[in-house]
Length: 491
Ligand SMILES: [Zn+2]
Image (cartoon, rainbow, N blue to C red; front, side, top):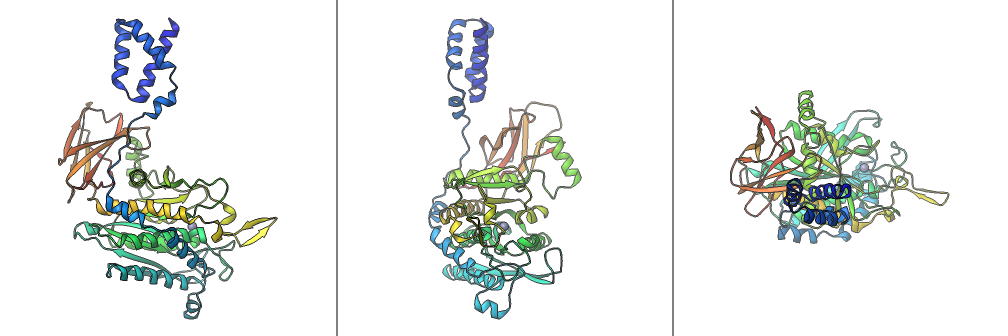
């Protein structure tokens, strides 16, 4: 009898795992009514011997929007050879330290950060010529005053290209990809020593460039910015300046993808099938009142940056990118930072994209051999096919977002009364044809369910808001999905 009860309980738990609620309800019902008890017991014993993993594998289906054939075709054009050529060119400047030379003679000689900056600019301009002048190539240049890692006033220049959206209203929405083109060796003040920075971060710079080359051949309602920044190694100076400028000028940056160290270092424990996506939990820019609300309602995993990270993961599945996005629910790695933080600090959704396993002998190191170990951020450690895979993850995300309608505005969850139904309301998003309500268990990392609700701005679902986390996203007529927006409670 004891064995029977044990088997029964296990079977019920398994049905729960499998979300096979009907079978679960059936088991419970017959257990309680004790009718057909023998049959149920037999079934329970059978189920209890099926390994858990088999059941877990048939877990809830992942929402997967259909692939856009045009975006898929663009991804196929991303070239590992082009990426290799770009990284080789960046390494050829010998050092791209932010404090290194940028005078006309050095630029002419092809040495130092000035030469790198001019080359990046000319590269963006060549892509623009190939699309009939569709890219606006710009620089954001400023003088940084002396500070911890900047001994004297230094001109820092970000270089970027804007692919303006074709729809006047949607063109105000900006999605952005960035990498830092400055490099360093062991000494962050060494202005002349070799600092190849092949992985850190010629790889990320080449992602911005290759996304620009390929996506500038397409047209999107929303705007895409392809950015390369300097000053990262000195203290995120370039990205800080850029993000502050964007905030001051009221730019609507919906998403910023920061690629830093995406070279797929060829070390033995690398996983070239995975790329990490780091995202902030409680937003860096949240006010104390906002932090309190987030804590009260269990919103620690639902920052806009984390919705962006989930979007990247979903796009990776939709377009079957060979580097699978691995969500890391953490602002950045231990002891490290990056340019996404500059955007987070200004209240923008931003994530960091980084290879699965870093080799610290190949970062921020003078090129040298010690006891048979090669140090330095050298070309030979970069896996160009991997960088191309990461570029596809980025391009798929940028294209999907720039093609999608704006996320629905003012998403609210009615919380006036105690009730087990949940009512969501939102403001219509221009250009959208319909909406989807998403939800997941509070302990689940990704959205588990997506329900198309048609072209409405209000829906009541027979589910308790206490037990799940909801979000709403907008969908256009071709199936492009916006970022998901988690509701604020309305009392
Ligand atoms: Zn870096």
